[in-house]
Amino acid sequence: MPRDSSGSYTLPPSNPVVTQTPILANGWANPTLTDLATEVTNSLDRSGRGGMTGPLSIYDGAGVGVPGLRFIADQDNGIRRAAIDDWRLVAGGVDVVQVTATGINQLPSGSPFVSAVDVEAIALAIATAEAVTYAVALG
Image (tube, rainbow, N blue to C red; front, side, top):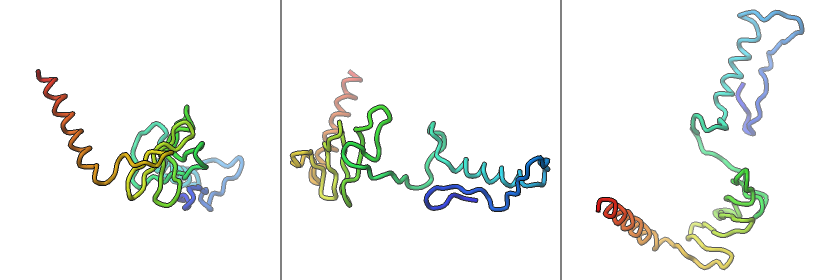
């Protein structure tokens, strides 16, 4: 029995477990265990084994101090959704970068430090830095 849209798993409805009943090869246990094995296999492994086969939806966050995607040992740092098409990088419980469809803004001032026209310049700077690093390594 697969999980529902909320991720809740329910045991198969035909699970007639009776105390003191022997487990037979063709009884209730095998189909139930097969069903459980399938759902465990479909779970996201905490150690990173396996991979996502669909989009990963994250919690929006409960505000600046509790971003939806955060670190276990530093929970006021991460990413949060502030509004529709507006997400923020949070450091120390403070929004520091805003990302929207129109560009990236440094916060709290809101002054842009990257915009759509800067993307080519940034790519060129990265390519130049890589070329210099490569040349130094060869020298």
